[in-house]
Image (cartoon, one colour):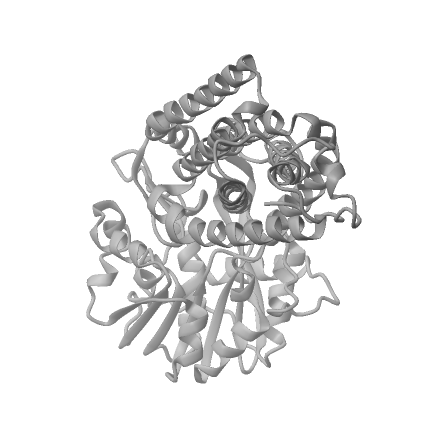
Length: 543
């Protein structure tokens, strides 16, 4: 997309053409201007697709979409200005310069997604905040694409003025109109066509090919007389090489993705699917291999100790009073519902998760359905495949227990599910004497985020009892192993709830009331005072 710049002063139109005669074109001036503006349109669409592809991939691999979007877009806009200034030196060879810029942009933009995903897969994750090569590579691609996109500005202005001189203001208006309409088309094509139909890797490769064809065709077809025979030959060879590289990458993309997935998740991937909202991967689930469930590259179910996590989440809330009607927010894997159904007296369980593919997997995959005890086959369990926030806004039910089995606070993707507004809606559906329990992330590793959740729950008028449980496994994401983990929870009710366990609950051997209360005291010692609640317009969690 073209970066706006100050138009030339009135009367300077002739200087844009260098004082030369109008270009010798194989078509009339009107058709020539139309073709140049059509090229601007296509290149602008491709440029915006590159931007959105970097933002989407960085958000998926790193998390915190606001931060990634801010970094990518700010670096690109800065680089566009630098590229525009640098390209002024090429105006005397505008056609050759534009052809070379578009060939380079097609190669860099088309391969950017594969390169970023390869570094993520084969370097073991993204490390700490803005450390290591992968994050630097993201900035490098943003910088390179911005420089090349910005270089289009003076070159396109020179070319359009070569066809027919006009006042600089009119030329700028024409260029920007074509540019912004192209950006609109690219911005709509990415989420509604390229991403769902081709995926991020193939979508970027196809965009690069379109970019190379458009730039090469414009120069070699319309401005070929501006180039020497050797220049035309070099530009043709360069574009053919770019298209060949992109085509080879497109042929190998499936093998590349399988190899990268093997590097990320190990050699025991059984299921890998991209749903409308996330990537779902199942590994293991065979004798000697515990089942692991990854959502968007982050471990959500660890077969080694998931039972401890789900028992710690569910049973304290279920043991504190009535539990005939239970609402599970998240929990599309069915594991929280499994623990709920262990309690006698449960009449109805509503499970709300936005991903219908996860519900299907929890029903149909033999290993996962066995792990969740075929919970979704129980007639008392009712599933709702929709956004949890939206579902809470329209429901008028009254639940004895509400269980928020959500990924954990951090970044913008889950911030609204840990907001004061979300807990206000959760409080509204609680029956008199009802309890709410929230998975609030690790206490030891992220005490500020944990206690922000607790402060946010208190802000809606609920009394809270925070507690934690140590996990036996390590905190992991795909391709990375971090420190030993714990899980933090907040139990809440209209009056401060007591942390207890029902001794009649069957199969509850991994938790004891004494150990749970000791862990609650340990969690209390990490309290961070003076924290403000998180809201939709002011989220207070960071990755």
